[in-house]
Length: 181
Image 1 (cartoon, helix red, strand yellow):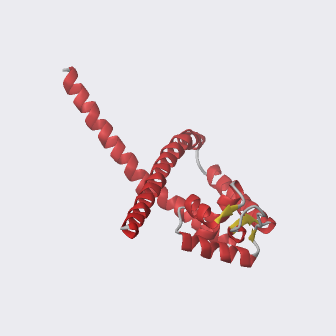
Image 2 (cartoon, one colour):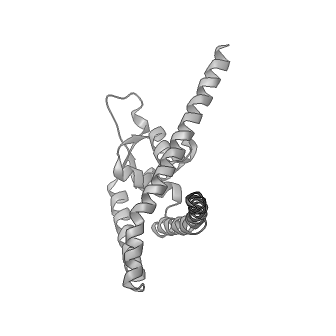
Image 3 (cartoon, rainbow, N blue to C red):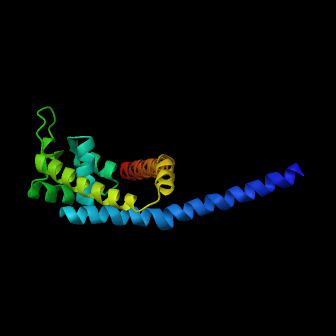
């Protein structure tokens, strides 16, 4: 009897895991993506520009290559976003006297800080209005679930970035090997 219960529990766990995956992929991520796109549009930016500004708010200055890795964008897309941000005054080239490649270092400008702070304040007010429409029990359920969902999605994103980095390193190694021979 214990073996049957274990098999039923395992089948139930698999079904719940599939439901979780479907919920996150089919419902949560598109909504979050739409939310972020609306944030970028409201600020007059595109999603790659917003991603670069967000990263520069955490770690700054960075090279375009480092930004590309942290934003999960290609080097070309990151360079284009940085160019647009610099042109519009949201970011600035930063000179590092100790680095011969200093023209590639980028930091967030005061305008970028102000714009993101104002945009985030607007979004926070929007979310507060939405939360006010939910019953208290639902708000608490969402608040309890957020750290769990955040942890799962963050671990998955980190694993995907690491995998992509390993694949890139392997591809570069293979290219060097091919060029060497």
